[in-house]
Length: 92
Image (cartoon, rainbow, N blue to C red):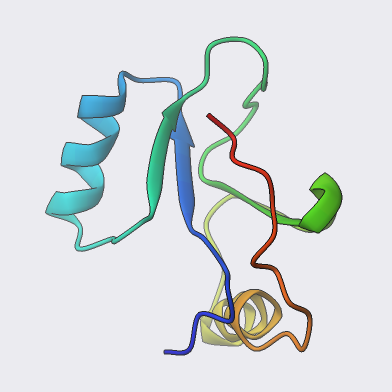
């Protein structure tokens, strides 16, 4: 799948090592894993946030995606965007 400069970052309340183990056991590959340490408050998991260059939030999905149409919508917005998302600042 073309990534178009998109980076996948997983964040959770658990320790980074626990998040990594969970993702690995479910076949989820991400570029970076972060532990929420209070700077970002997670109210519900899973939550997806699409953050573009300049830290502009362009999409938010809370809870499990309901069907393949919703999954395809997220994939299309994140990976098939015509925008160059390669110059986002590092989060850590």
